Length: 348
Ligand code: CO
Image 1 (cartoon, protein in one colour):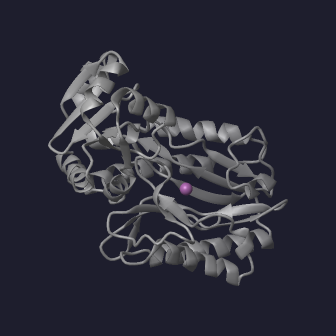
Image 2 (cartoon, rainbow, N blue to C red):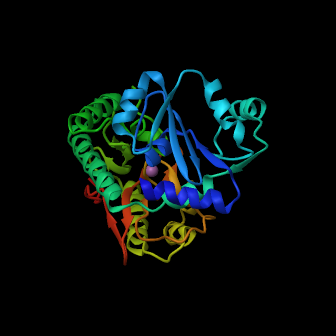
Image 3 (tube, rainbow, N blue to C red):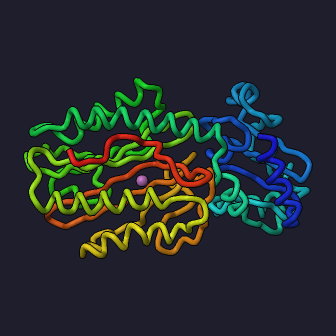
């Protein structure tokens, strides 16, 4: 934790800020090791760091925080402390009303963004972080196994999703990383078809997109199956998506750019004539947030480096027919990539 804060301190000194104020929960956890229900305010100066927390959570913070903790009763106390600052670093997502209050009550003259440095730190996962994400992925594998066993004609999508969530929690997950997507039949053409009351029918393509939130980190995986015997077109699009997914995972390694990796998968799908049906990016970073950097999109020029954790999730979506998406969470290694979600990828 110390080095994370010292890197931030170097950055604020170099960029002529008097201090930095962190308020986003996942960043508070990242820099202090504390995760508080009500959150708090981490104030970092070039030589110091203090974590201001509500009185209610003072004890909890004192036990978990790597940074000295101080309690406050009213935000006015924080505004008072900040009166000696002219230039303050903030997260880009800080609310306008809060920054207006800081301007008014603390007389802050200028805000600078911290997003670049926070991104640069968080985008590379430490071996400890990778270990936790790997565990989150293992839980996602267990939930997927249950989905594959349970999905059958007549059951509702919601029923399957509930069983998956149960398995995740029984295996240590705090919660689902996001609302489980079970999209069957024509609904599988909706990339974000959260589980509904629809009953699964014979012949349906079923897209299952799920992940676990475990010890503050996320996992993300998608599989697509056919209930009963797949028809030719279902098989065709499945094989195309699988080929694109495999090739992209194989090509992922340090040195390749995010957009070149997207292109590898997109070119395959385009060659088969479905380029216009691959309507999203190839993937995204995964960590404290389910969607973080880098974006594996057609425009992201991020060069992949060892320690990045990303998803590879090409898909084909045909309105009124159905869709296929196959997704793994992977980690970039020194010379390639390793899949952290391991459920089999062949068509079931
Ligand atoms: Co994803």
